[in-house]
Image (cartoon, rainbow over all chains, first blue to last red):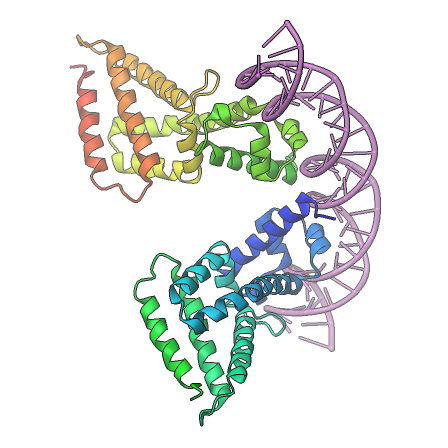
Amino acid sequence: MTKDVRKIKTERDLQVAFVQLLTTTGFRHITVADICQASLTSRSTFYAHYLDKYDLLEQMVAHYSAVFANRVDLRFNQIITGDIDTLVAGLSVDMAENRVAVQTLFTVHEPEADLQANFRAMLLKKWQGFIAEQAPQTDTPTDLIAAMGTSVQMTLIEWIIQHGEPALGGVTDAVDTIRKAVLLQIKTD
Amino acid sequence: MTKDVRKIKTERDLQVAFVQLLTTTGFRHITVADICQASLTSRSTFYAHYLDKYDLLEQMVAHYSAVFANRVDLRFNQIITGDIDTLVAGLSVDMAENRVAVQTLFTVHEPEADLQANFRAMLLKKWQGFIAEQAPQTDTPTDLIAAMGTSVQMTLIEWIIQHGEPALGGVTDAVDTIRKAVLLQIKTD
DNA sequence: AGTGAATTGTTCGAAAACCAACATTGGATT
DNA sequence: AATCCAATGTTGGTTTTCGAACAATTCACT
């Protein structure tokens, strides 16, 4: 049942080469032959794993979307409760392994495969659910507040992906301030 | 006649993993199973390529020794003629790809496989031949001069391997001064 | 619109890698 | 000295990958 090591290795090689190529070339201009050449894989093997380059992209986007989805529940609570330090540290850890891949895939926006859009959509859904729970008495449209919260979180995520963990000075305070401002809009008093 | 891509890949994987392990563990304590586990290769495949871990080490040492031998003639002339800039730049380029491997292998000293010793021996032979050509009239033992020249070059090589190309400030002048001092000892006047 | 080159996607026999099992060796422990 | 355990090599059947060839499609250029 568990996959053959060779399959794991070729998929790893293809994906690494693919991400590498994406840093220098647009997705549309990358050919299957390019990916195979860069990863020392034969084309017939590529097609044994993926239907085409779109399938490769979609599987990668689906994978990282799933990884992110698994973390969202935990992390989301943290921006509500204000545990910013833990949030930022946790996000850094989550992103550390996949930093290069996620950073690169964030630049690709295909109709069927848009990692950045997926992240956004997940967060937005979370915020909408959260706000609905609070049943707030406010004039501000709830969808606007949800969009604001999502944007703040996405900006933080993108910032961490860009700069890595080391440079976290000042980030904590800034995000904390903004978080409070957003939450104030749904105060149910 | 040309090797199958799969052979190239597995040998690359095994060697990379081996060097990686060498940075944390002594050669004696590294097992074949360790190398295979780290490189996602099966043990039977390892033995299809190498007799044992000593064979792996020896083949790598032989390889880098051969690469170095190919460059020695060119580079050696440069330290005589005083073209230090070209020498240092060339050495950096030569070492760039193999930097990590050579740097690591330099720490391993097995009876049948000692890269550092091989480099030394090649340079020493070159110096001895060069000095003999000059048939110098000097009181200083020629073997001593050869040993001095060899040491200067080895020190430069090790310095570049340690620090990489970027930090070359001041190196050129220092080596140039020492080179002149060594050459003065075999002045045939 | 028409032509040629490049890319795609598929097929199949040969080569390589995998895995599990096995006997053998070498070192540490009691 | 006897025992245990980990590491070494070896083997054979299975799976995957490779490479080269092929037709089909797309694209650039005239």
